[in-house]
Image (cartoon, rainbow, N blue to C red):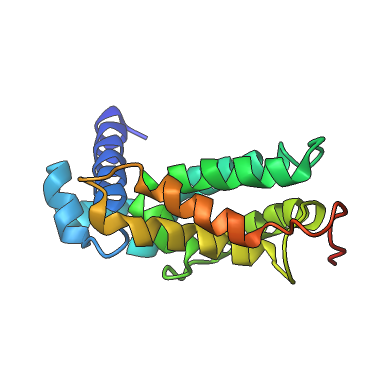
Length: 186
């Protein structure tokens, strides 16, 4: 790739990352192109669809969350590991509205859907080892994390750490304090 094309692609990805993080997947290609200082056609020369652009932006973030879940699979205290993962995950969602949109299923792209499925599977291992109530699944946890972010989002500027309080309420409700053994899940 020519140096100017590499530079243009970087400008495009930087602008897309910032705008998707701020406003989510609903940002238009035209707005991204304007912020990057390029034409809309240039965006489509690099990415065939807006969903391809979103997939390029959030793919690394999803991989990071998968790695964060997997790194806690063998934790001595699996319930604490789930709590740590969810705290880390919601903190990532707070910083990136598009990631929240993707995790919540509002973006249809094969790579994104595969990434979210890998994330749900990795989280399901944590859930299977932790002491939690009911038939909680990895996918449930991913969706609940987006819910915590969305519940706190309207007050983000005034109370930037409100999501931590809401996550605490959620975790207190999910944890099974009546048993010392993890629930069996398949």
